[in-house]
Length: 125
Image 1 (cartoon, rainbow, N blue to C red):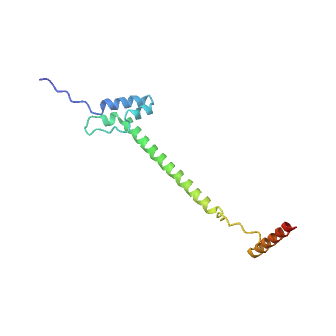
Image 2: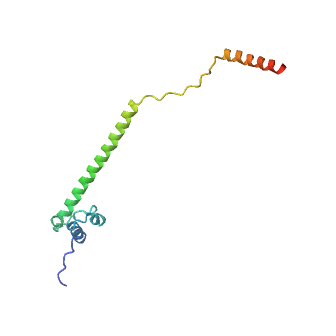
């Protein structure tokens, strides 16, 4: 039979599509097409150098996402510390006290007896 042509690089078609999307600066479409999932093939086929912009874009995105995650963690940490600081600075909440009677119990009893006597005298009049 004839010459058996070598099989194309498994990354070739996918990598070329990603290169085209990156060349158009369509990062969202490149991400949807699997930019972060593609990996250099193990074969020595030249795709590593040909797809260098893909690997570079992956590296930049990973670095940016890691920086964003660190920033979000820092913001959460700062908000938590500020809340803790504000809680320490806030005055302690006052405990509600039971309403105090306007008269001591003995005086209230004397007043009640006097009111009863006065009501009895008015009823007899």
